[in-house]
Length: 194
Image 1 (cartoon, rainbow, N blue to C red):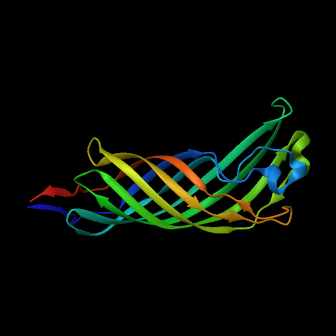
Image 2 (cartoon, one colour; image 1 turned 180 degrees about the vertical axis):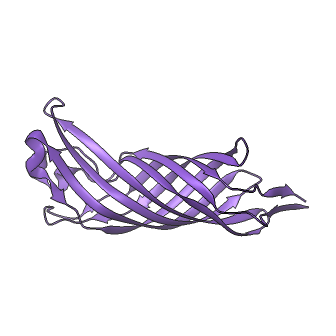
Image 3 (cartoon, rainbow, N blue to C red; image 1 turned 135 degrees about the vertical axis):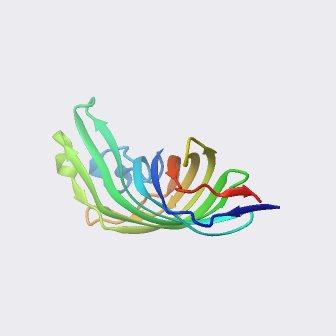
């Protein structure tokens, strides 16, 4: 009989990378900036944990808290000047992991703190603080077994979020898809067959 027993499984480490390009451009909410920098894109690195919660064959249920750093740069004036949007996403996601078929589907919330637009060179005058923002996340991943307890995955993550700032003419839509790559280590592998 098939099962996805996780008795004795300990929390594991999660490392993730993601990238995308979506959402409003800076020039849409801050016209004087004249930048094509997008609020829903950039590069994201995350660190967190995977906490097994239980199982109902063939699914294992997992809680994934994480913290990361996300940024996107736009180079203007032939690359001499740079403007960037950076923030610190804190996420809490709940996953259903189909152990036998090797895929995870999850959803949860994200909170973006320490958000700011930073300009250098001629763009220094367009620097601005951005208010903290809360959004929602949907993720789907294809998982692959690895050596020892380490697994990897590739997937897509959709983030629905909007940013506000006193420097904007309107809210900036930062929603969009990110392509994700991750590695995680559960201290004890689930048994796939009884």
